[in-house]
Length: 137
Image 1 (spheres, rainbow, N blue to C red):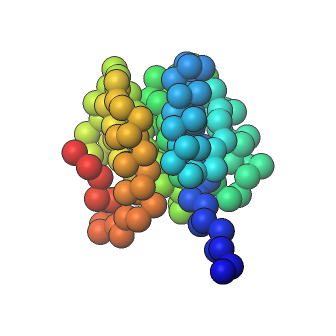
Image 2 (spheres, rainbow, N blue to C red):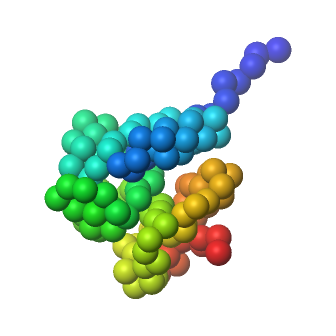
C-alpha cells in the first residue's frame, strides 16, 4: 500500500515581542501541522514576509515595540499581502470588529494554545462574507 504524505497546513508567521509566548505559540502551531516562522516585532515581521512569499497566516500580538504595533502591522500586511489572513491577540486591548482588517480575527490573552490553533484552522477554512471570517467567539 502506498502511503500518501500528510498534507501540511499553511505557513504561519508568529509575531510577539515576548520570547516565551512566541515560543509556546510557535510550538503549538508546529505540533498542529503548520509550518512556522517567527518575528519579535513588526519590522522583523515585514522582513520575514518579504523573504517568504508562502506565508498564508499571521498571528500577531498588538502591544509591541518598534515602528508599528500588531494592529498596525495587520493593516499593513492586509494592504501589501491581501491574501494573508490574520489572528490578532492581546491581553491589554480589545479591538472592535471595525478596528480589524478584513480576513482577521481577535483572540484575547491569556488564551489556551488550543484556542489559538482552532482560530488558525478557522482562518484557513474560512469562506469570508463581507471580508469577515467566521471566527469563534
